[in-house]
Amino acid sequence: MALYQKFLDSIKGLKSSLSKDPTTMDNVSGAIAAEFLIFVSLILAALVLRHVSVVASIVVVLLVAVLFFTNMPLAGKIKSEQSDSLEKMTFYVVIVLGILVAVIYWGLRYV
Amino acid sequence: MNYLIPLMVVIPILAALIVNIFGGKDKTVKAISIVVAIAIPVIAIIAAVGIQYFGGHDPALLASSLPSNLMGTLVASYNTGIVYVFENIERIFIFLMGIVAFLAVLTYFAEKKEVSGPYLYLIFMGIASVTALMLSNDIFNMYVFFEITALTQVGIIIASSTEDNYEIALKYLILGAIGGPILLLGIGFILGTIGSVNINDIVFAISNNYVNPYAPSLVIGFALILFGWLYSAGLPPFHTIKSAVYSKARPNGSAILQGFSVLCMLAFGIAMYKIFAYVPYFNTAIIVFAILAMALSIAMSAMEVDFRRMIAFLAVGELGFIALGFGIGTQYSIAAALFQAANEIVITALLFIGFGTVYYLTKTSDTRKLGGLIAVDSKMAIMVLLGGFALAGVPPFNGFQSKLMLVQAALDAGYTELAILAIIVSVVIFFTFVKAFHTVYLQPKPKDLKFAHEKIPKATVFSVAVLLIICLALGIFPNIVTDVFIPFAGGLI
Image 1 (tube, rainbow over the protein chains, first blue to last red):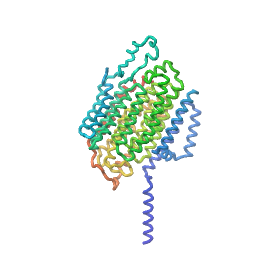
Image 2: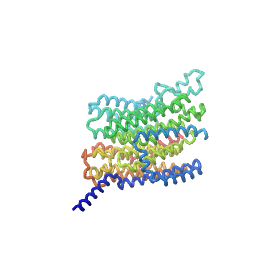
Image 3: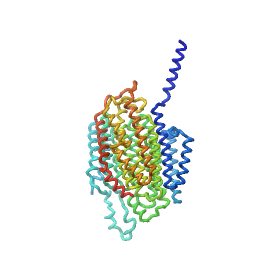
Image 4: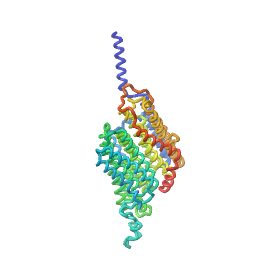
């Protein structure tokens, strides 16, 4: 009986630990789709650079591929960066503003 | 004088004030709201194409009465008052927004017995603002109405009484406190350089070399206005807060909010295109944000377990398609972008209202707690599924036609990568939607799932059906709108 109780308790423990984990087949398939989408988007975005410079495009494609394979999975990291946290949202808003102004203002001087 | 043009703005403002005054009297408020909501698209259809010079400031008449020393100068050609331009493109978008607003108001009345005067005030004020934004040919006037739109968006979230709505509204206000003033600062730089905020005057001054097109003040003005455009549209880095905004409003409110965002994006996008298309790498800058919007938002939607947030991310991702069309920068791609914008107003409204019925029935939007809802109302489930097909670009719906146009335009312009990306993103949209649909409607109903309501109101079913019919009609007869968009895009480039 004690053995049976132990077995039952271990099953209950396993069940409760599983129920805390939100991972389901839907989550996994969604995360894999997101991972592929991010990878493909990065590579295709890098390929668009060929309209500016073919050499730059090749270098960036290789860089993106190396960075991706050394940092995957990216989907989870990107999800955590895109939370509803005001700090993160403000950070990215300010960063984009800075990049836009810098690239457009100083970049156009050399065009 | 075509008085129907200003009336498109005046009537919803008056309606907003009146429904707020009669806040406690439900029948009166409902009657006024329905009449005005019908009147807006009707006026958009019957109004003749024309120009409205506020205060009678017709530049052609004023030019002849100017002192001799001003004759023939740049100033002589300037518009001295606010100008509204109403063409067929404005007709289409104001009509579609009016239809969505009418159906959203109808759904609101069906789902909520005691109507809120302030909520309706915000809806009508928002409609007036985006209509003015579409009509105005003056970037400062556009900014003013955009800020009113942004405030009404915040108000609609607060008045929605959903979970965490105050927090998201406050965050949107804080981020708007960065985006709004930056946009105004950009407009200020333009005004300081050219001396006018009228778009035609600015274009005339730049194209005739009255000012240096690469003057630092103009270039910095472009950078700031581009940033403001990202804020107004909800493109990255504002995509997270925009999707949160959509997901925290009532479903009928979300349908209206996304329409506002599309119109804001279009109005500023067209203005920016008219003024700054000569800037090197202008198109590249827009393409970068289009790719970011599509990749980030759709990836986020694929991982989302809250269906309202998932649709919100899909809606923001679809904005990326519109931006992509503008970024490619050919006549056909811009026409495709405009078509995509028209489609998004309708399709996303359908999905917000349609999927909103799940929230109405169960008071939850967590897909892990839902299932088996096809048994409650199979007709609604099928209409939502078809709406999802339209969003993903499945024939014969409108989404297919606009995305096909976009892919063809990308291939014609030599952007093969962007065509492939557009197709891949559409595939992921399809996957995400079908996954959510299966979870909510087809998987076995959880035992602990409780219902707040037993049936979906008929008015909601009617609203979704009308939107679906529009999707189908635009899919089978795309030339209803493309015959307007293609010549307009030709004039833009």
